[in-house]
Length: 422
Ligand SMILES: Cc1cc2nc3c(=O)[nH]c(=O)nc-3n(C[C@H](O)[C@H](O)[C@H](O)COP(=O)(O)OP(=O)(O)OC[C@H]3O[C@@H](n4cnc5c(N)ncnc54)[C@H](O)[C@@H]3O)c2cc1C
Image (cartoon, rainbow, N blue to C red; front, side, top):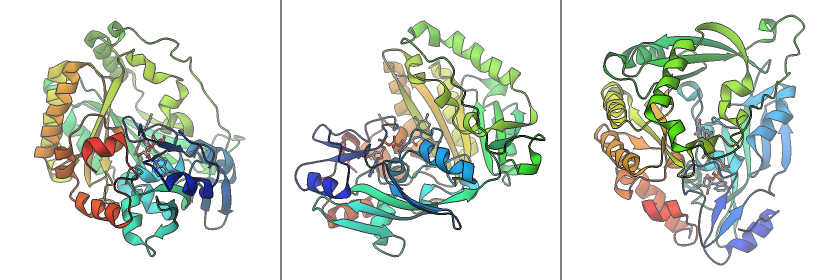
């Protein structure tokens, strides 16, 4: 792995060999891996400019979302789109065209992106935006690092009045009730449901739905500092958990407790635990033990969501694959990125211990997803097939054509791009 510290040194690296960019390594699978060569953006970590009137940040691609929040939240600015961890780089957010709990209203990261500066394998530094090199721009947003190394970007932030979220929590007894809540609450800025992936029968899809709004200054307790933040760090996971800890009865009991004990109603919560619950648990991934885990995240078109989700959840519960709570989310219109994941409908995301039977289950889930016109999220994927991706991403051929046109095919590659023939 090389760790260049200027765009010029990235260009010098790329002129020979076969490379992929790596941000902060938070993608779940093999997207940022390439045995032939990895270009880390860890040292491209400078803020370059901030327009405090328009809320537009220009920075290098290795800047982490958490650093942006730490620097600009006290000045009243927050990301327009944030994934579920602050430990992601700007380049990673662009390459995955990440979505947040507000996708139904705000779209994905590409929607707040103004331009990117890319280094190509021939050493060129090219700016791409909606106006300049629009096809390269559309291939880059969600393009999994396969259009060159993003070295700089400019994107908009949103104004907020505090570091708190006004959270409203509702319980849904089954899948239909959960979907009905999402549809009725489309005006909510943020919405997400924790769904019990082990519930069956009449309780299939039972969920706890969290809605959220940025709290206004006048909604805070008297005397509260508007941008104060509590950095809660729970004890880490010191050793790899034994498999027994994640057995079916343990997870079932855990899911039951979350469903029963979640306090419904409205309350003010801190922004960090609201958006980034796992960030407070160092080494959370070790809970799955030495064998590790895989995540499955798919999205189904709106018209197919109710039936398709029922089939997915039935297959998951029947497998006894013992997964902690899953996440369900309503997505808004499809993004412009050629390989962007979001489409209007519902996305389901769930972790599974990486056992042979769960890997078989994932192949079954791929079939159900495809039969309902859905697609798998590449950033979370480690297992899907080239055929499933070709079916789920109709603009893949246009993406490949951009790769050929800019001399990227064969020069910028990852283990994922080879596995999935991207
Ligand atoms: C706990 C957790 C929660 C998450 N929640 C969400 C969520 O809610 N929504 C969501 O959309 N995603 C979510 N993700 C996924 C995560 O946002 C993406 O995988 C993101 O791309 C990771 O950024 P990174 O900097 O770690 O990139 P990496 O993991 O290092 O790389 C990911 C991809 O981006 C490419 N890339 C990185 N930097 C550059 C660059 N400078 N130029 C070109 N390509 C580059 C890589 O080649 C690779 O293909 C979550 C991940 C975790 C671990």
